[in-house]
Image 1 (cartoon, rainbow, N blue to C red):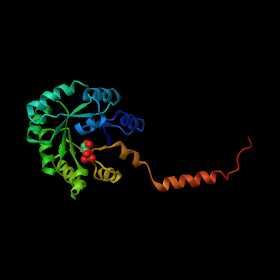
Image 2: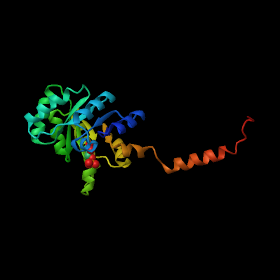
Image 3: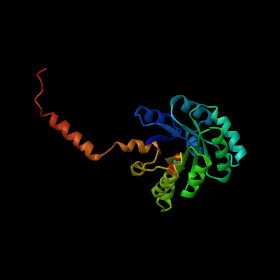
Image 4: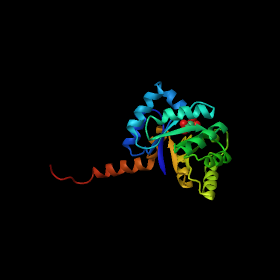
Length: 217
Ligand code: G3P
């Protein structure tokens, strides 16, 4: 499973790269707003750092406006993936972009039929938001299972990119289901390696090591 970092914060992206846990990056208008920086400046810096796919989201809500923005965003580098909301107008834009060979990431997906439409439009990635479904007492990971089943049934090339990841169990479940990608906030990445029994075991090893006779210095 590929790990994308769900962030526009260059400091977080650098930390994930240093861990070998940044196969790509996803941004969205809210993540860019959190940086307090101009979008172009953020994108230039991420493109210079990350060799993998970098999702940059359009903000137009009509297909023509989306296509116009997409062509500008694509100029930032070959890693750019155009992120498009799952609207009818977005599907029109994705169809056109896929025919031009431009990679797309269809975002704000909350149902399996939406994901089916995105695949038929030629989306490169689909981003189902599992955390936001959990927030309203629905089962976000069930949606991932449903989409994977549908995509496998018809051998769609669209990759399932699990988004709105809130904790390590989402990462575990995504991997068990066979999702192609999980886009993970760095705060969650930071939790993944941690286990209290590892800490306790290491503490015991080091304490016992102190009892081992040492070579005379
Ligand atoms: O990639 C989408 C993600 O940033 C949304 O996460 O926690 O706002 O639902 P969240």
